[in-house]
Amino acid sequence: MPREQKQVRELQEGSYVMMDDAPCEINHYSTAKPGKHGSAKARIEGEGVFDGKKRSLSQPVDAKVWVPIIQRKQGQVVSVSGDDAQVMDLDTYDTFTMRIPEDEDFSPDQNIEYLEYEGQRKVVE
Image: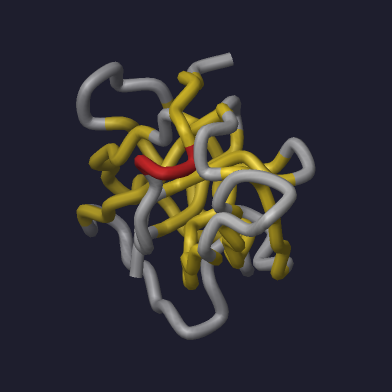
């Protein structure tokens, strides 16, 4: 799995973190001061990159968490049929089928940008 470990204090809004074994983009990050019984805590709220589910995480700021390495790639639409598009990666020339987002219209020969992590793909809007 392409991922690395980072301390919670190194995270920031807009970056990615693994929550419940799913890559999530951080929407909100806040810390609480150290108390009488322990270290400072961080509360992280995020949304799944590929499934859209909201998740939250509460950890000490010196704890380590997994950060997914999500690749941003370029592709070209080869053909469109119904809600699916056949896309060719512009670096490796591999072709694969992707679901077209509801608010997007794809046409053949159109260049698109997408995110990829462990076989999951999502069009960047």
